[in-house]
Image 1 (cartoon, rainbow, N blue to C red):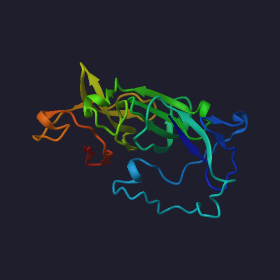
Image 2 (cartoon, rainbow, N blue to C red):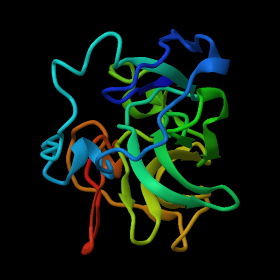
Image 3 (cartoon, one colour):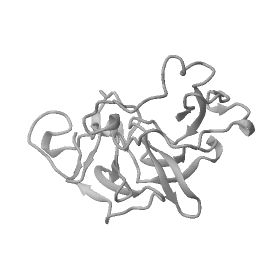
Image 4 (tube, rainbow, N blue to C red):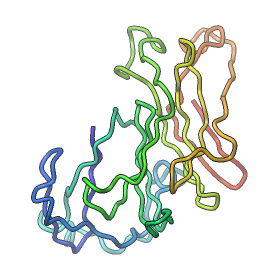
Length: 231
């Protein structure tokens, strides 16, 4: 599965065909910063999806000729988590870059340079361990096919320079949740991570009976008080 990049208003760009950029050697992607960072699901902890500072996009500027798909980023699994964006991240030996972070159900996290052609956009990729077969979690009745890895959207802490993600990982035949804090510039583990998440409640609902494993579908939320994760 791939993730698409979009040209900003007012820039006339070549359009990409499915999974392939047309005339790749001629495509120039924007290198300027976006108007705001997307550090958590839906843009903020209130989950409003609101950008109250938007001043460029309008019916007059978002047209077939000025705004559209210009590339595809290849990844190794299904993408349920929202892609996140952080501008001006200092990359060792490469200077400041605007990064798009994509997490997959195969437990991989990618950082792409938003201002580079897709073939040269990958800054780093890490895999956080084997994913969990969805049938092991949900049995025959599931809305998730094949595997469960990073299902919920992570959260970025710009002050510490880390991306928090929860990965569902298969260990000794059993699923285990791990909270990872990945360096924004390199993907390396930070803050003594990963940390095992272990908890159970009584009940008979699937995923909870006898303390059985559930799934983290909700997005992580970050504030200076800490990181919140829900099921």
